[in-house]
Amino acid sequence: MNYFDKELENVSCEKNSEIPKELLWFEATSRKKGSPAYMWFVYLLMVCVLIGCFYMLSCTIFGFGWLKNAFEKDKPHGEDFQYVLPLADKPKLEGDGLYTGDGRYTVAGIAQLMKKSAVTVVVYDESTTKSVGQGSGFIFSEDGYIITNAHVVQNGDVSCVNVYLWDDTLYNGKIIGVDPITDIAVLKIQALGLTPVTFGNSNQLLQGEDVVAFGNPAGLEASITAGVVSAVGRYVALGDMSLYDCIQVDAAINPGNSGGALLNMWGQVVGVVSAKLESEQYDGIGFAVSTAEAKPVIESIIEHGCVLGRVKIGIEFYEVSEEDAQKSELLVAGLFVVKIDPECDIFNSGLKAGDIITSVNGKKVLTAGDVALAVKDNKPGDKVKFAYWRENKEHTSEFRLMEAPTYKVVDLAK
Image 1 (cartoon, rainbow, N blue to C red):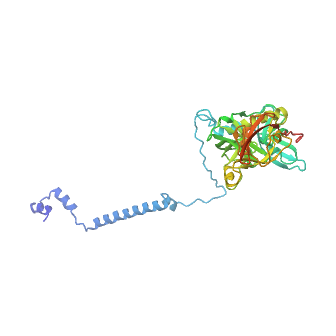
Image 2 (cartoon, rainbow, N blue to C red):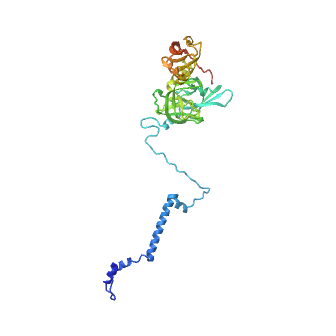
């Protein structure tokens, strides 16, 4: 007997006697668990739990929008159907986005800066009206002087050079002079009030510094690519070109970029884009002629129409590396002399074919680039001391530098 039964025994069973309300309440709530109402409540609760579990599992698999998609059908695309893809405005920042906090340009800023200074150079030959070459260039004076690459305007028998400005204005360009060794060419158009670039000192460039190349790769005008200075002072020899102060960059450079500007993030031109190392094994290796090397060339071309004062030694040779010397019986590394020009003073120095030059001006020489660096500060007529190896002995002598032939343009383009 439970607690409630004991309490009921104490209550009088007389007619009309009243049972306390609190006992009636307890009696009502003490129904047996197997009653129909209780069982329906349990069933309903279980169904709700199952539905909830099914919904959460479905959301995990199909996503939270599956139920809505199941009841909503796609609206048919009628003739008047329009869909507008929403575009968000660029967040507004302090400034115009063309400068960084320390005053340098952003890439977008340099693109705006170079817009009116860059040009497209198109070359035509005498036998056809079709172009035989196209490249980039940039204006460096208000009265129409333009820099491009020599190989851009030396493609075939040039009869006409067209120069297009940023607004597609066409000018006939006159070739003032070219220098195949540095791959620099200077053009002139009859125009005033142009927007020239600002030159910077390439000797102040640091390895890893940000730079951008501006030009017309594949004929796509006013294209800009960004990268870093991979190295400075590179020696590059390609064909007639022999550069001992090139800037190596990893910015994308492609055909059509030739003659374009390489700029630092202060908006200064620090190089003239010239070449790219093309091979399936390499990528991201491009070169620009530094302004330090291009400056005297440009000045001489404008003043004289050619580059004066370049020196000539007068020998033909091939390079012998340290490794090659160890593998052969040559014993020393250097420049193996093949031929000596009898018109040059070095012919009278005692040097003979078969000798190996080991130093010039007191500097060790193993490559053509080493020779160029050894005499880069000399002028024609200067005496140069050199050392060479013959019959297992070192000898020394000296010779006078000769003046190299000039390359002067005569009516290449009208």
